[in-house]
Image 1 (cartoon, one colour):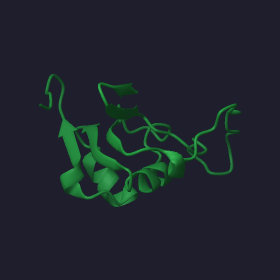
Image 2: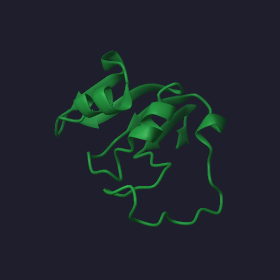
Image 3: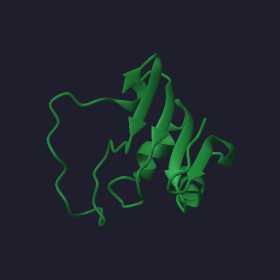
Length: 100
């Protein structure tokens, strides 16, 4: 999303999304986006930690373009460990919490 000059992404999956690397055929893309072609991203919002929303390869690749990640409780440790994201760039929020 590009709104009021802010670039926001949600549940960014750019690679095969399967619990087992040898199963699951990826969907065909007509206008595939290359992570290296993205502009600076102000925020990535990750809704939950299922494998198809928490794509560690994409998070590692995206982290050089992203200012901040917003995640639900318990997901910060996944981004730090699996995605290599610095803790100070991750904001964990509980239900009904907001970020100003």
